[in-house]
Length: 266
Image (cartoon, helix red, strand yellow):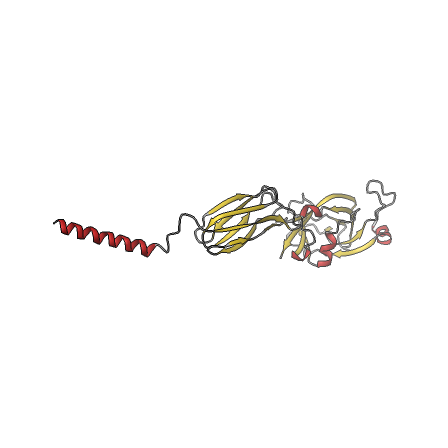
């Protein structure tokens, strides 16, 4: 009886040992041995200080966070071999959520930067002079794209009119002379005066109106760059539509309450 028990115990130990050996390849160690680091920054290369970034496993769906330092650097240690996604989640409506896929192998130290993209070219100041003319200064520094215009597919702006055909976003765009005072121009800023005295930069034609939604889409790379050029005294937008009798300022929302152009990236 005693010998039988000894044999039985040996058999069980042997089975248990082989079971552990068979499963050892799929049971991860206590910690992985790879790292992932990088910098979270805007397109103009300014760092996103103290922002939070997420790392998630594409296999398990599990995720962890790190808080970037003052220079935007993050670091994840003890990672297993896997395919991951780095995510910066938007903190306001004018910033896109950013995703970057990255593969990590065993015993690897991976470096992967993540870029934050603003989704709008906002206005700095705007002044309507009459039904056919408005001035606008853009705020390109707020978009933080630097000179990376090649990453932009188009700029778009909207206006909801409720079905009215009397308004338009179609305009000729001029350079406002640096010497002209917005608050006291000293002249009648009529379309005829602007056409004769200002430098024409480009023209914008609105898309076909659908359900009262007026829209402009700027995809010409030279015009996109011009919009970001930020001339010192802004742009003059002059109505060019021969049917409409009133110009409107493009907005980034459908509520007509936020002047600017939405940035659509490639």
